[in-house]
Length: 287
Image 1 (cartoon, rainbow, N blue to C red):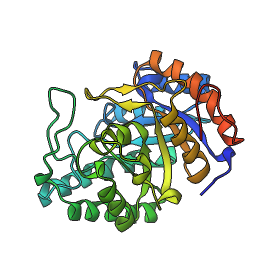
Image 2: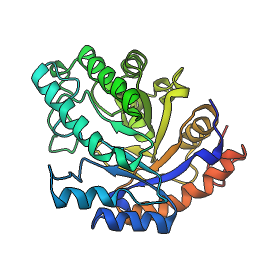
Image 3: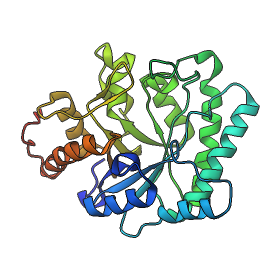
């Protein structure tokens, strides 16, 4: 489903904009004329009081398109333990409640990792501790709350766990009614992608559910996001299809340092207008 390019916006992670704080990141976003994907993983608001109020206020920057990436290291919405799953939902709902005043485009969500963070920088795939049924239950609850309160939950595909499998990812989205954040690097870095699987398998038939795209080349075996490369044929094909076949609004250059962001932002800025006119971006082969 194609959408008007005027409804689309380029964005960056707050840590890459300015790692010193949210207020500085918002100012940098205004200067660069990009939106912000605020990470609630690294930036956790206090339970109450002036610290919480100051942080929330920094997210209300006028003129900045906003989305939020919900925390994931200490929650598991697909846990087979109903107590852990309920506590996870309560934490996620708490953060949503705190941030609704910023009128975010959407909330990006991880689930189904099912294992501890390893020394190699990857999440383990201990799938015995999670289940598809539990994931659907949590996603349905959040989707229903979103309909009641006016926000959008977007499930992200990951390198490991339940959502790394395109068939499982598709079922989770379809059955629960949530939207999609498509992470290009995760699709290419997953076992499916590394074995030559088509990244579009995550999206086939879900094109009208895509609200956000995470743009970078791929996630390497150490868990690092590789910046986009000029002349990348795979990235070129994906961006072309995403622009013309999905309803994605937020196009997030998902890198985590200012230096990596600025170079990649210039590259992506040069591609997107040409994608909109169906022309081949310079240095980026398209079909």
